[in-house]
Picture 1: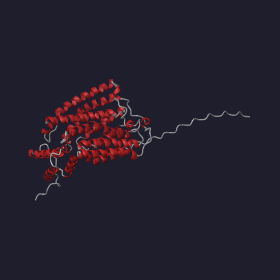
Picture 2 (picture 1 turned 90 degrees about the horizontal axis):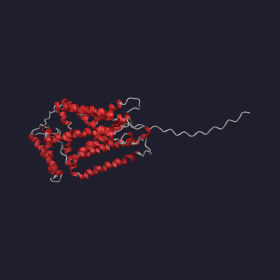
Picture 3 (picture 1 turned 90 degrees about the vertical axis):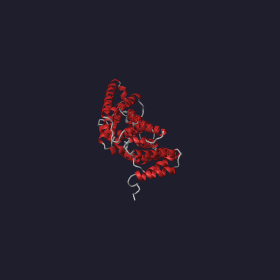
Picture 4 (picture 1 turned 60 degrees about the vertical axis):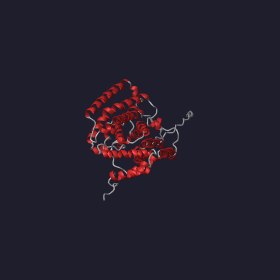
Length: 393
């Protein structure tokens, strides 16, 4: 008779397999962002440039990316590398952004302006954004360019778009990096600055890949914008920008000197990175388990509702605080005038300057709206686009 076999030990139940999260859809997110950018973003910047910059960055780039990541079941700040904050990599990124501006961006932009026709440079002159702004609006604009744009655009383009496009190792991440840089530059709708912004996108994306953190790219982005804005304001304050003719391009010797200084700084930063490896942070983005949301994903309507409410309240606030300015901007859109070239006839420049001064007075409540409307209509009929000009008898 066979001996009874000992009872087998009960097996412990295996933990249920965790289903992998679906990656965000970067192409769809970019398409939606671009549609919102050229519609809602363009309208808000026409109503008030300073307000529009903040509105675009916060509610289109940051808000859209946040909702997309939450809907996909991720922790947005961890997935994008926004947390944790690492000081040494951020400082290194800032210094790298300053050096790169002089070493690479300035020469590329110099060549682009040298090749581009004068009418193209005039059409895509970003410095017009700063014209006619009050001190408060100028401060808001500078804050938007130096703070909001680096944070929100890096969150969207590098944190969401580039990471979602990047294949898992050991596949190469360079294709995703290049595509992201081109899309990032294309969003700015500036053919003259296209190559320079592609280079910047490559730098910001490389920092994201190298450090696993979003902060070095944010800091480099902020450094680039701060230096370029400071140089423009310094030139404007000294009168150099006003005295420069339409066909004037920066002296090549100055560009060469700045490039040499920038490349010297880049070599110094490279040497410093070899002696202080902590500036590279952890060197890789957070893993799948780290980026997974610990709470259940709320309904899409629940996620988007706070952003819609805040955007609506901000628009209402703009109408309350600057109702006259909004009305003036709407009237300006309805009755456009062709921007004057920098070498335009002095009489025309004086006439346009008088119109701007009248606009400022109306906005402050020191002159009636009707007076500005009459003068704006007259100049629109005289100097506006062909379809707006009064036909000659």
